[in-house]
Image 1 (cartoon, each protein chain N blue to C red):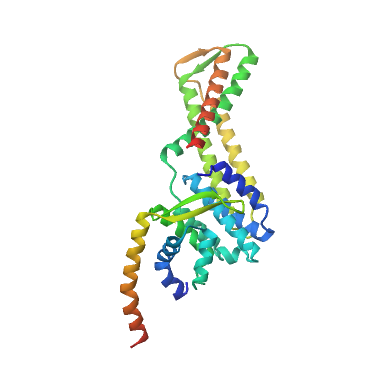
Image 2: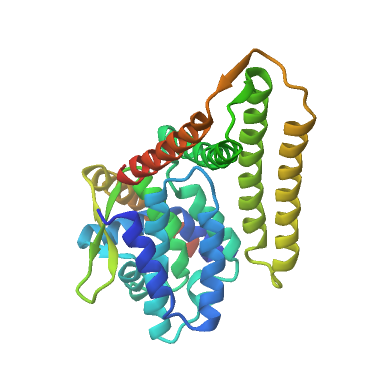
Length: 107
Length: 222
């Protein structure tokens, strides 16, 4: 595993939560949004284990619904518990990101 | 909530739209994930439909299954299985009871018909009959566990050994039938004897089959 994907692994849950927080999405949309945000390293398939885990933890709720274009898709939205978790991740990330950036830049 | 049967139907229909390469990749994932026992059926079929729809969208954009799901499908599938919620114990129990009732029902109904053709009441020894039922019950569960394992082991192989698989399956089924025959022929009848009328066996068989049907309906409604 590359360093980048190892680093990403710990924070991917938070990124997924942040996307779903903005609007209800289905799997393909989610991976497109992650890619467009610049996370090209996220192999599209890896979002599915993440989505299952987040559902198990009760952070997101998924519902199968007929889509406009026909097939049933599973749409995900954030639960209250998920919102709390996302806020916590945001705070934790802020606490780490600044000192680490400073350190690694060698300033 | 979209029902399981609808999801399976959607999967069967939409899967036909995959190109050959993507179909092969996806069907391996499907077999491997579906043959994992004791996982919640609804959640399993939902994630399978999600991944199929994802692949179909990606295919339209010119991507391959390997681009989407990576070069290690087995690892991904294992992660998916780990993430799936477990089936409720009551449902697992109902499923096992259903399989056993169905199998015993067929067996008892058929022997019941033979008794009717014979036209004579039959003497049953409770001890040996219960032993036979136990052997059959254990046998059928082992057989199903073996089949799931076979199917799972063949997914993701470069050259699926379908022939070897069919032979292993035939061999296992043969052993099972042999065991049943050996038990019913060579085991000396023991335990209290009971005379049953010509129709009792058939009725018991039919009741078991109806029970199996009822359990199936109950599971599907859950």
